[in-house]
Image 1: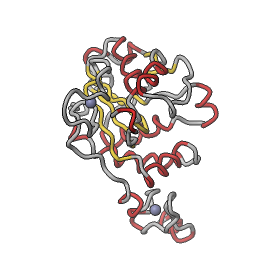
Image 2 (image 1 turned 180 degrees about the horizontal axis):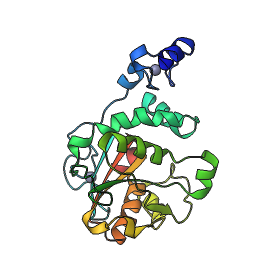
Image 3 (image 1 turned 180 degrees about the vertical axis):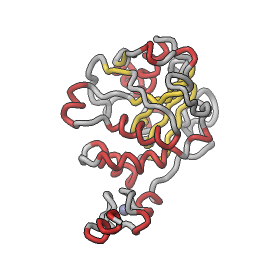
Image 4 (image 1 turned 120 degrees about the horizontal axis):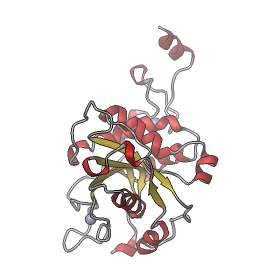
Length: 247
Ligand SMILES: [Zn+2]
Ligand SMILES: [Zn+2]
């Protein structure tokens, strides 16, 4: 009743294109048309990193990853509409949009080797958001990957555990080559609260907003692996279309 009244007085609009949302969709933040513009990443892809190329020879994207990082998948290509959604989440002060992005990520579940959610806390699988550095966290006020992880956790019924910390700030990655990116983020993460989750018997699902070259996820996985983790997978909402330097 209250909700219906609220709808009448303040009709909800799409955070991206400002079209009015249909009444039955009033709890969403992105309209069906904007979601429809998100282009899903689909196979054929490298079984491990989910990158469509190269389809022959050894994949260069995941060649240097830690062994415990088994599989990575991204929901949509980071073009036009998807980039605007990530931008709204990260820089637009619109953290509520995380729920809509998580809905797209949730559909990746059948492509990943994930155990069923267990009722016992501390067992089974946990979602682990990639942390921000303290300075960025202070400026933004929230970690977009943690918001994404919590929204995803509600859908997959997995607990969210902020097990990683960033031990140092890293330079902005956008202009670096993949090798330079890996060097840039190597050793940037550390695992904390080890006793809260037994690393050897758990599956950790790293959650990040965007996959560019995979260097950040590889560094985060390395920190979990160093603490004893053996089964790590990762999901992101967006995947950057990798530029020429990888080919
Ligand atoms: Zn829209
Ligand atoms: Zn690969």
